[in-house]
Image (cartoon, rainbow, N blue to C red; front, side):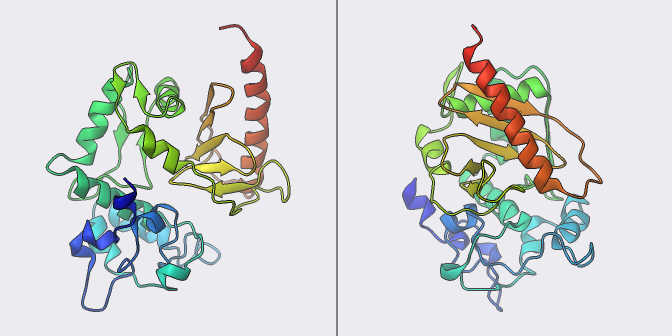
Length: 265
């Protein structure tokens, strides 16, 4: 698995290369998963304008363009070896392209269908795709709270489901490995909401728990030491201080986890 992580992204998706050298040339898969590609990307834009995430939504989620074609438009801001953490929906989308390539001839969406059945999901789920049917990494998986909790239990047990080991245990050990780099204060500097970043998981700094954030206040929060998974579904659309809301949610989850740990099961 580590050998895969050290390979350049373009070795998995050769179509990313262009004559003018695409943003992902020479980016290792490990750097891509850690949001350290160095791509010239502005997630939020300036006062709501010039947002690359909004362009991604219009072209890719709007089924007007493939992720591959959209990604070829972008260039590097800094060399990959010097790139700092910078959240990019495009990095997540290219990571899904890589996974789709590795899974061939099976599609990534087909693998999810098998895994969804293996965790005992009760309801269907939906995952956004581009115009070619490739899963869109950053958005959007839609599922019920109970099934998201089942997914959280899969992660808690490091890939083991009621039907056996369906994801290698080593993947989770790599995905939540701490690097010691604080990338967000979660609205509280020097407090319990400081976060590191793993492979698509936000890691609580100095702690063992970690969480996935969804759009507008969705969480799958895993507490390995307590054997607890907390799912939160919210509607934060239109809020003006999402970082503070996230911090409040994390602290509320901590309180719930403490109670859940002592309640007989």
